[in-house]
Image (cartoon, rainbow, N blue to C red; front, side):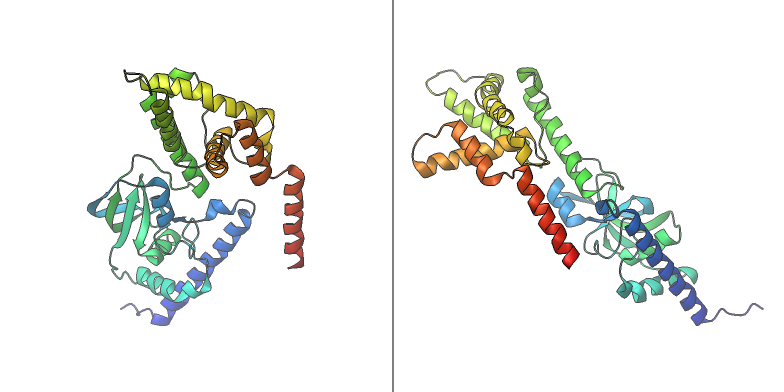
Length: 309
């Protein structure tokens, strides 16, 4: 007759597992010191804000690959990308679940949201963490899908997610408007989401004004070409000739076009008169842009502050 393993033995084994998981999390943090976003767990709330899913569908009980769980609804600060625990205060709950694993105790299924082919934990973060630590391949889960046409990858960082959404928006804009064929331009690029909708609205407003006094509705393609030739290109050429993009690191000409148009409109309303676009472009750059030397001073001041801290 086999001797029953004492409860304290399970406690010790699970406690050691947690310590090992914490050590692995520390090593991972060091490895990603220069790219911390690479090990951050995605926040479901932020992903929903970025992707804007169109409704949800209940999928019921499923066996889900643990490797496809990429984020959390509420505990994304407590675990890293591999669901290793980041804080000591997680020990008690984590150890109790690890003990249940060793003792073959059945636990309730976790609850997940699915979006774009990857999963986010609604309930059961510690169970996912233990499963990853123990090399479990699949886990029982109650799944609700958030409807989205954008495909995600479980290894995506927040920055890569934003880029994927921007690429999707660009493809949609070009497909629906034939923008590239009309203008022979494929470099209308943005660094933020939602900007192609803004450009589309600009085109519609431009179409409205050039259609004044014309009895027949002009086609969208003609309005796009007119907007591009008479508004976007001149502003873009000013941005390049004045080297204004140098003052906005990480941004694109198209980003600046949208901001300058908004600023130009506010200037005209504020001054109650027409303002030359050249003046608006330069004024915007002077007020909101940073010259390279100014950026260096800001970086130096921040670095000195860190050293003194």
